[in-house]
Image (cartoon, rainbow, N blue to C red):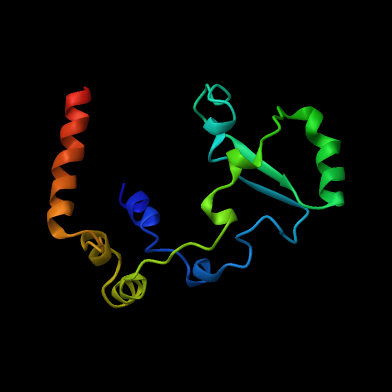
Length: 142
């Protein structure tokens, strides 16, 4: 949970994530393989086993040749750009305002310190409300 929270806050991203040159669909590689976020827009039934889906972007004629040679061994579904276009295919990630403080604290004080410290940007009352609200909703759903 801690990892997920800090990951989605963008606080532990590498500095280069904020100015990544590959946040677009014009990539120098022949093939790009990624998680297929947005599959629900394509077909809400294609992930019925709930194991997730991969996205394969063919970037060059050589990539198409390679993919065509193996695709008969895969379950392939053509996807529309509207389904697979996610923020990181448009622009680099926004880096958390406290990213540098997070790194400094880690270097000086270690993992246990950053694990316990909150770098949450929300007002304190919203942080407290979230700590009460989320467990309460989980309890009600049971």
